Figure: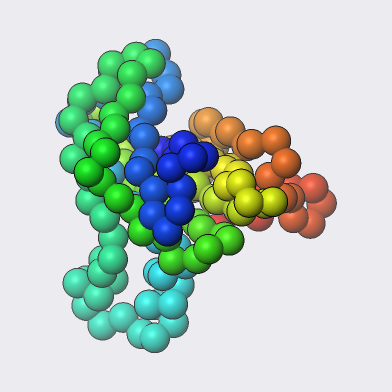
Length: 147
């Protein structure tokens, strides 16, 4: 998922882009605002409903090689004006994966870093990564991905 730079304000319209050789069928996404999730869990969660509160579910459908899904009616609210982190969980008939999307506002422009990971046994390797030039790096010149 990514947001076009000019579409980001207090909310953004996401674009889901297929990257890979094989088609994806029956794709659904669950978008978690990690800024809000951290606040919610710090207050204590006692039910699955509280755990999932605020998550946004998006039925995407089928994506063939090098296609995208865009729904202009879908607005994803931002909980911070300068730093926004999302984790997107994808499920499809042919697999599961997750994406971390970090947005940082630098000089009035939103920069993005994303990584896609897929469970492989007890490991979760990164299978795709894209970082905008100028995205702020953390200690050791690396991106500080959420845990």
